[in-house]
Length: 159
Image 1 (cartoon, one colour):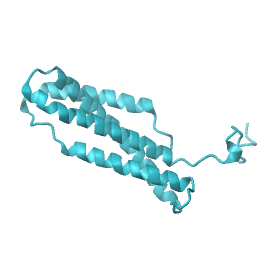
Image 2 (cartoon, one colour):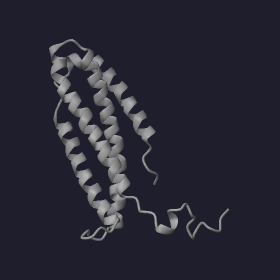
Image 3 (cartoon, rainbow, N blue to C red):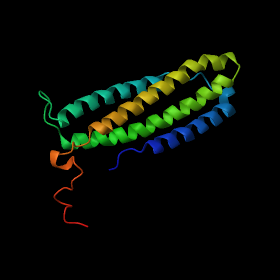
C-alpha cells in the first residue's frame, strides 16, 4: 500500500468545492440551515485518530512502557487513515465551496450559515491532518543498516 498522495487530496478537495458551490447555488432557497452534527463527528474522528497516531507511533518505536504492537491492528489503522484523509479532503473541499458561496451571498440566512461552514472546513482539515499523522505513524522504521540508502539483503543481488 502506498502513502496517500497530497495531490490526490488536493484534487478531491477542489472537485468537492466545485460540487458544493454548484449545489448550494442551485438549491439554497429550499435547504434548511447547515447542520452541526457532521462537524462534531469529524472533530471526534480527528481526535480519535490523533490519539491512535500517538499511541501507534510509541508502540512501533518500542518506547518504554508501550505495549507490544499488533501488526493486524496497525494495518487496519493504516487503512482507516487512508480512508479518513480522503473523506476529510472531500468534506473540507465541500465546506470550502459552501463557505465561498455563502461569503458572497448578501442574505441574513447565508450569514447565519457561515459559522457552520467555517467549522466544517476546520474540522475536516483537522481530520486530514490526524489521518496523515496516523498513516505516518503506521510506517515501520528503517533499520540502521538501511538508513544510508543501502539495499536490503533481499534485493542486493538484483539489477
